[in-house]
Image 1 (spheres, rainbow, N blue to C red):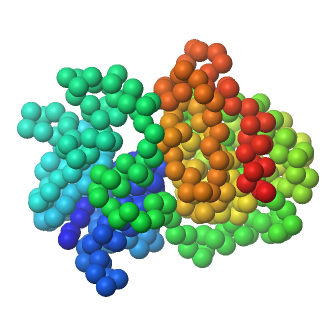
Image 2 (spheres, one colour):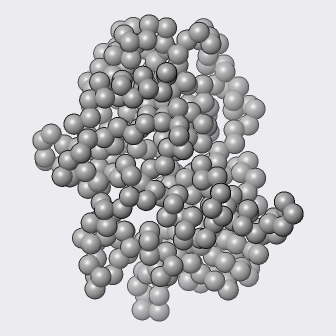
Image 3 (cartoon, rainbow, N blue to C red):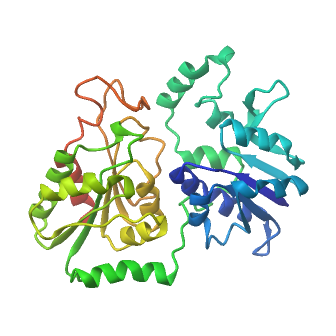
Length: 350
């Protein structure tokens, strides 16, 4: 069985999809040995997260995709709804195509066997209610991403659905060196705080003031703690502003790195990770960390915590709106307070 998975982005979506490769290997195995090969087509940045994944036999970056047109596949799983990957999926030689593709009328479509997921997105046909109906279905959905995907691809019932990210020893040492630099020992509770989500999702993030209040509250509650202000390159200035409102030296502004795997190494040294619904959530769960995730406009029901954490959100009529901005006050993210986060952290540190 020769399988190609097409999943280009976003980063968090690629990572949480990795369990599908594990499930397929388990599905097509005899006497403990798999009889399928899995190739994965993605973009440059997510490709780094797939390194070391024992369930992916070949990683192909998007710019090298033409080589795949010469191959014959038994099964192509196309998971991106953008125009270019849909066109490419339709050009491949395969016995079975499942997912999004460009149809003969030059229109983006999807196969009926992935309707459970794609019918809640932008490809839902207008004659079936279009985007408005898709948004409503998204809001009504109570299945997790993993449940939906496992059913669509008929994965084994006992498949481990956690995201897969295997850090190298060198990457793990990166985090350990940070502990040594700041004299952090096993006596300290290390709490990572990632309250940003890049500029694209302003309704996912805490304000600078609220993030600082949370850090100060955590330090006040746990005197022996080290609070790490975490984020990516987009949060450099934001995190400096947060630190300026947190005078305690045990609240540390961690210099952001562009390397996702090194960022994951920083999450790995934490006892608890507090994060928005973003890449950090999936990286944290992949590292088996106790994780507190707070939600604004995205679906809390879609997220599986694997017994590793708490979801924090407030019921409102606009929950799961998937809007980037809003004029509503208070907004869904405004309703979530630092005290709510503290209570969730307390549950996990117990």
